[in-house]
Structures are given as C-alpha cells and as structure tokens.
Image (cartoon, rainbow, N blue to C red; front, side):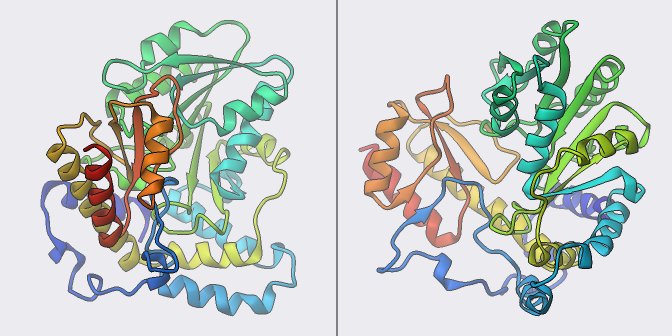
Amino acid sequence: MKSIDRRKWLKTVGLTGGYTLLGGVGAIAMEYPKKLETTPDNPIAKLNSNENPFGPSNNVRAAITKAFDHACRYPSVVFGPLLEQIAATEGVSKDHIVITGGSTEGLKATGVTYGINGGEIIAAAPTFQAMLRYAENFGAYVHRVPVDEHMGHDLNAMASRINNKTRLIFICNPNNPTGTLLNKDELRDFCSSVSKKIMVFSDEAYYDFITEPDYPSMVELVKQGMNVIVSKTFSKVYGLAGMRIGYLVARPDIAQRLRANIMAMTNVLAIEAAKEALKDDEFYKFSILKNRDAKNSIYKTLNDLNLEYVKSHTNFIFFKTRRPIDEMITAMKNENVLIGRPFPPFYEWARISTGTDQNMKQFDAALKKVMG
C-alpha cells in the first residue's frame, strides 16, 4: 500500500472508530512475542523510547530469517530493490532517496553537511536533539527557540532568528517530546517561503500516527524542487527500531550531497525487513489502532489523576508531573516502569510511550501509586 493509500485509511480512522476498519478480525488477533510483556523474570515495562512493542511483524520476522543466507554479503546485494520500493512509495525517482541507519544517521549527516565550521541551525526547544548535538560537535551554532504556549513550534520566532549564517531550519513534526502537530497550512506556507532562502529539514519520524484528514508530508515540496529535506524511519510504526533503517527524501542534487556524508548506512537484514514491512498493511493498521487504544488508556490515567497533558499525534504523551522529573523517573523505575528522560526546560514534565495492554495497566497502577 502506498503512502497516499494509507493516508486515506488513516483519515477514516480519524473520523470513525473500532477495529472493523481493519477489514476483518484477523488483525485484531495478531500474535506478537510474549517476551515483550512483563514477566516475573523481566518485570520492567519499557515505556521510555517510543518503540513499537508489537513489532517486527510475523511477515517481517520470516523475511529476516530468510535473509540470513545473505548476511555474509554487503548491503549492495539487496539495496536496489528497497530503493525502488521507497521511491515508489514516496512518488519520486530513486535519486531522491538516501537510505540511512535509522533516521538518526540521516539527521546527523544533515547536521554535519549544513552545520560544519560555524553554520547555524534553528530548531525548537525542546525537540529531538540528535542532529543538533552532532552538528555542534563539528562547530555548528544552534539557535534553540522555545516552543509556544501550546508546546508547539513557534514558527514566527524561528523565522526571526534567520541571519546570513543560517544554513538550516529543523522542524520535528509531530514534535518529540511534546507530541504537538503544526497546522498543515502554516507548515506548508512556512516551508515554502523559508526554503527560498535556506534549507528546511522536516523530521517525519511520527508522521504515520497522524490521523488528521489530508495532512501533508513535506515530500510534496521536495517534488516541487524546493530546498526541503524529509526524514522517515522504520523504527516506529513498523517496529524496527533495533534494526536501524530509515531514509531521507530530497531533490537529487541535495540527496547526492547528503549521501556523501552517510557514515555507516544499514545492513542486509534491516533492508530485507524494511522491504517486507512496506508491504505488510495488516500489521501497519494493527499498530496504528493499538497505539490509539494505548493513548486513550494513558489519557484516562492522567485524567483520573487530574494531571495536565498535551494532546498527542505520536506514540507517546507528554504530561506534567508536578514534581522534578529526575525524582519521577526514579520513583516510576522503583515500580518497574521506565519513562522518558528529562527534556529541558520542562523539568516537571514526563514523556510516556505507548505499550501493550499489560504495559498500560502497569503504568496506570505505578503512576497512581507514585502520585499518591
């Protein structure tokens, strides 16, 4: 199923409800590794890294197992077919695609490309830091612009920081860790206008979880030849965080420049996993709907405790703890629940990832105990 088809399906999910949209009960009963659930030997509910607790899918597991026959070969053996598959999914030619070791490698390669030797990057605060910190290691200066009162990107304030040294504006949308989503028209207008002067990077790691009707990927601006780079990953909805595979989409001349700064790339098993994941529509839908259920469970827990939170468009929720985050992390760990790290300057807020039904029950009990 191509991206556009999945977006149409997500539009339906956003407007209606229930598992009937899966086209049958088969996907509801999908099996996943029980070792991911907590057990007496492994009592920890890991809800701190925004991973998909249900993946990889059974089809992907079979593809990985089969791929061991080629694990002795370099990735060039299976690289081409995945490149064609991603290009077809995004509706661009192959020379627009840069395959990376998770989207993080693409973020870091871009940070070096545009930030080295004093280049300036503008980003929200807080947001995902991989690109920014890596670029700073190579002499970049990062303008960190506080999020607005709704914890979303303050695009006007970010635009005001542009100067003759600015090389890149980084937008993580939906944003990590706040889970906020930019208005689609404001996002499109901002990227279109700013990209006439400097490069814009749109991190779409959580794009698959957006259910707003007709919400655009900034790949549409790449297709128009604009100075826009988009990153996507197989780590989230596809459940391949441990395999390390993602990609960038950019105009061919930009993609060529970025490709030169890729350091490790990926591997044969991850490539075969990604190829199968793109075809596994049943698991894709299953993951989206289970994530929605888990978010609703978290919302209920937070509402029960009268805790403030930000409506999320991702697979995590940012909520106010009313106590220092370091204390909260320790207290929750003592109850066998791992939650997200500190995100300055919000030291009394916590990020909690979605998990299995059992994980959510464990989180509910732990948080209610910790909060008294």
